[in-house]
Figure 1: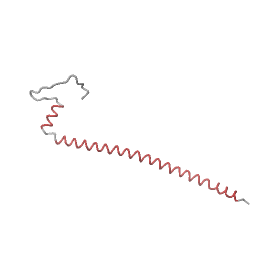
Figure 2: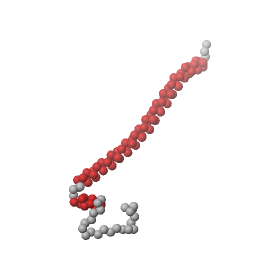
Figure 3: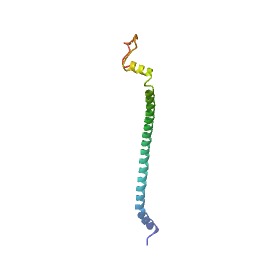
Figure 4: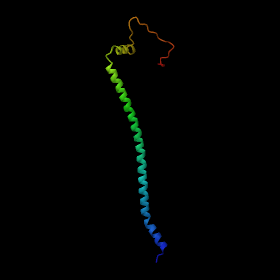
Length: 105
């Protein structure tokens, strides 16, 4: 006859595969959870970047719409003529600062 100690050892040996499988499944679940948290964090950061880009683009659209709205005003036409076409009014004198670097603008 088996003693109580021998029966306990047999029961423990019989449960070893179950505990090993349980350990492997537990490790897999933990790994999946950590991986999902890392992905979620990365996607959250990416979402914030996209939200800021959307906000910048909305501001740019508003600025452009304002420019289009003011495109036919005499002030805007004069500004474009002076800045882009380097035009001046009659009898107007232009002063050029020779000491100013062209890159400091």
